[in-house]
Image (tube, rainbow, N blue to C red; front, side, top):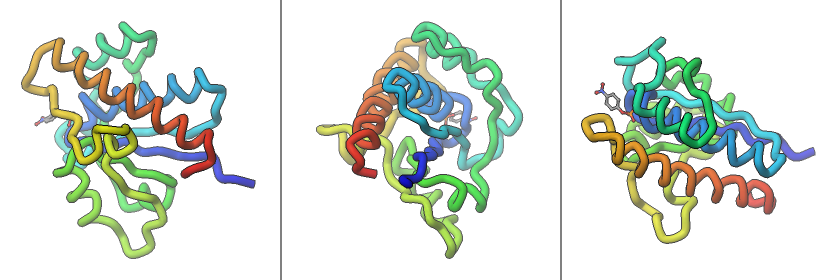
Length: 158
Ligand code: 4NP
């Protein structure tokens, strides 16, 4: 039987972009009736144990998803075998994730926007120093990626 996709979204702090990516993917999978595991993490440890940024919480809530109880954590060595896919929100995080990959890594590691036609190679821009509009842009980016990912998993291309 085919493995249920388990997807880890990774940004720097795990309080802005990756919690929204996790939420958007959970929503897209649920809407499609697709079984999937989702989580998020940061490459940095600044916000371990913290709730998402209030602007991320507000943005996700606007789209019907409560992320208040998400808790920041740092990516660990076990993540590379626990998840089938690890998606980096930007190129800097992608290179950090690759550099730290243990020898027994089984997860496919890729840049998130590579799954979106026409956005290949692009970063989901860090909205941390921005305003609420920047968080809306982040939501649009991670939602496009979530939809594309679900379509890809449902089509059997993993
Ligand atoms: P994120 O945004 O990587 O999308 O969660 C950031 C959050 C916090 C910091 C940087 C980026 N920081 O420097 O504390």
